[in-house]
Image (cartoon, rainbow, N blue to C red; front, side):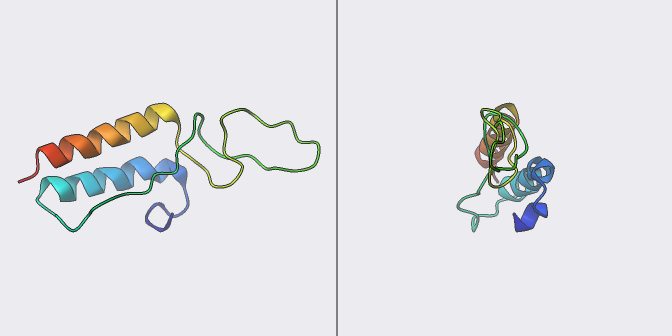
Length: 82
């Protein structure tokens, strides 16, 4: 959350920065935490609320398609590492 300022829309930008570091040979990064769900965003859990399937009730998340892109970006960067 800290690296993305608790804005799930920033997660791909943060991942791109991490990917660049990996590609440049940074070897101290051993993992990332990605807030991900089927659908993007978050929703409030309150009495009588109709919840949307696949949307977080805790932290805002990126959606599945964006998660796939982020993971591919990180994997490709690691493969291309110097």
